[in-house]
Image 1 (cartoon, rainbow, N blue to C red):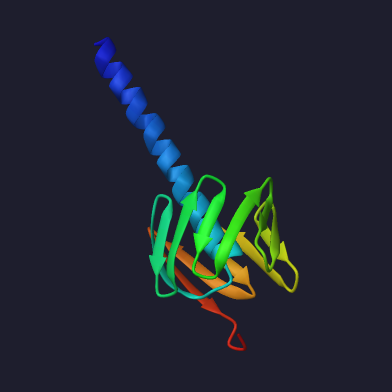
Image 2 (image 1 turned 90 degrees about the horizontal axis):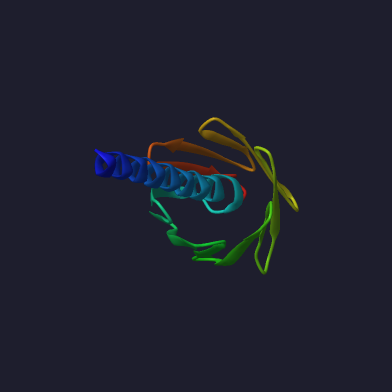
Length: 123
């Protein structure tokens, strides 16, 4: 009985950690990353029309460069985006998250493990 309880609690903990990883990846692709397209996420990886994004701890490896999450900021060689609750604000950019939709400089919709993101037409 004790083994069954231990296995159940371990599975629940792993599921919550995996859900947190997926949410973090969705927030990065929808709120921080400034490229459009369709991406499929699986834990720490997002693969899509713009290439692959890989999350390793607080580091995001993207086709356009490396981002590092430091506190509430995402920093790359070209830009910095700061997260304030459900808003992602950078120089000349902003995204606001409302449930599974990100609206601002682009529009991103998260549906399950798929992210549909349309950047501004002028991009």
